[in-house]
Picture 1 (cartoon, rainbow, N blue to C red):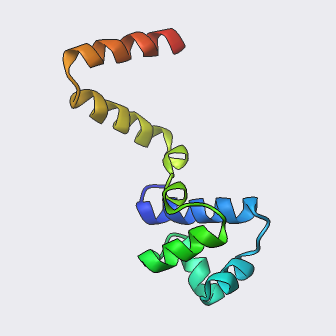
Picture 2: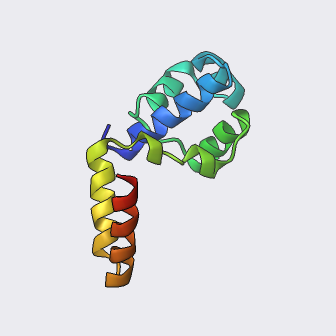
Length: 105
């Protein structure tokens, strides 16, 4: 998985299944066609902000929780994110991060 649409779609699917809803049931609750819901979950389409809000409400969550996709990022993406954080940090924070990583790895 490499793009935001795919991460968001996977997250919507994850939360929908957690609530025990079928794709068609969620589509009906938010007032869209099942095919559109499928495109959202497959990462072929972005929802509008209004639709994102409806999805979050229907899944009994918040838009920010819906957008929490960090746990879906693959290993290479996580490593790239860590490297970018370190590049943008001062020496003291890099040393602290190193000590923490050394302890947990």
